[in-house]
Length: 84
Image (cartoon, rainbow, N blue to C red; front, side):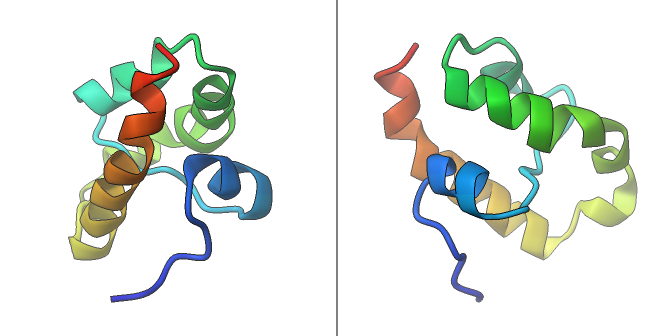
């Protein structure tokens, strides 16, 4: 397992060029797409929405992206609750 070069969604957005992989049509998509949180809006606009068609391709559904998705959910969940 790799150690990711960030500790939060804010660090991901500010200091990396990582994308946030989510499964199209999932609750994670709605979390970012419908959020009023400026950070979530930025991540949706820059790191998710432009790649949604790509993310639906089968080759993106693999162990590493699932691990990253789980990490992103865990790392941001408590922050999101306070910003709804």
